[in-house]
Length: 432
Image (cartoon, rainbow, N blue to C red; front, side, top):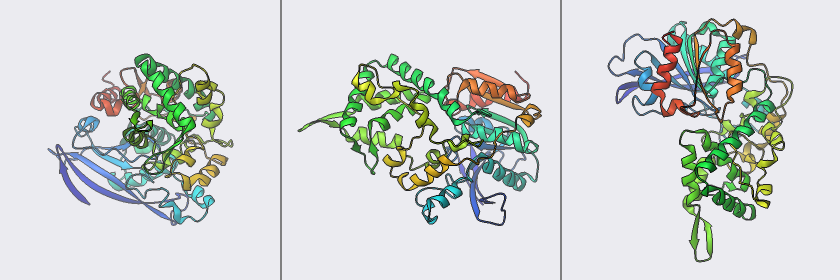
């Protein structure tokens, strides 16, 4: 282990070994990385452990600089483990480069099927035994991390001291189709709210989409920007300042040249940074698989359900006078054609989309009998996780206490994490 300091904290790099397939503990092994964080004023003090599970899927734990955001609040009471979940960050990353060793798309798909919440939680139980000697620990789950925490409550509640969930109460028994049928109306509301704030962006977005419909553009790094890919910039609208970010991105899209107006290099680079899955390919590959629980394949659910909402059709919007609607939090087959980080994984993604033997992720009976203290922040009209579904789940988990707020968007833990975590701790401890 290596320890080092940042302002207000002492960090220790930790590595763990877990089986790829927990039903075959003697088979292929993965190395997982976790960053231990303790307050600099008391680095050796015996404090309860708090495990942090990042959102995603496919995202490594946030890299803090010192005691930033919620971490500064957490180290007052806990020793924190920022875990890179399997396949992310420094934990045996899974991407087009590492997956190339699997010589067939089927082998890639079979391998990737082991990177859902069920495997992540079993990893956590191995790590817990090593770090705490078997004592229960606390868990903070953000977004998909909350999905993992809910699976934890369903399968290994004996390992949990308390659970905090932010923007991450999953739909317990719905199919992916139900998730996206609820998602598209939210996306429309977010787009309409953006245009109400920045009405000048209606014409700007239409102009960009019309240009791309006639001239698909190859971005730096080989990413193909189409009108549909441009629409997916709506993922920004799920963050607290996302509408402002989108506005500033749109306002300087074109530049005058000797041969007319073209999409500027600055715009193209900014779009590439937002749309590329190079840093988190599992987000795209497993995005619908995290909802797979029954014998029905997900079968590119977001793409199929989108057809039920024709107002999102870019060509139809451009043919008339309607504003171009943005999308977000959806993955489509064309992502695996436009993004060079995903193209080599296209066939594996097709196989995962057709898979029909996913195991259930949540146990309604165990959740109804839950005895672990749980508190959850539910963000009003969250773009990424449906509020109504979250509240249904909250009612299904015995003793779960909610804080429903419209002060923050989905990134509330990042934007004002000390206050969010402080509120959840108070809820769990019965102080409010």
